[in-house]
Image (cartoon, rainbow, N blue to C red; front, side, top):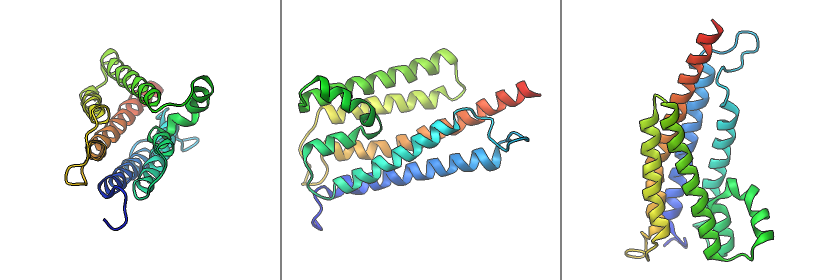
Length: 198
């Protein structure tokens, strides 16, 4: 359709890009215009703001390229590399030097990293008793369910909606919830730091 390889996945990737942009932009506005800043330097009190800005930029980059890759035929290797783009820059050179690249190994390594990350976030939310831990747990649970779509792949329904496209669809509301959690964390941590300063 319209000479697109996977039109639904491409459109849903663009929506994910938009959700990350909106999330990152509202996070930026919250930090610099709504929350208090340090009077001497005009820097934010939130100590993780730089990390979340980097995360936002890397995520937008990954979803941009995902939309591009789903519009044209690309090699399987390139599409798999950009699936985990932010971590790939760190892990892939190490991984490829140790193991012969196979799609099965790639899926197992990405699955292991994904499950590990979900478990760490879920445990962290419970141990710290973060005020927005239920949002965090909803994202973790939703990502775990979405991961099943990647594992148990099925062919396109009517030529458009395959498991991967549905995975793209599930990540849109999860992205909204995730950025909502990040903004809640910024409010919570800023409030705690401001109380300590006073």
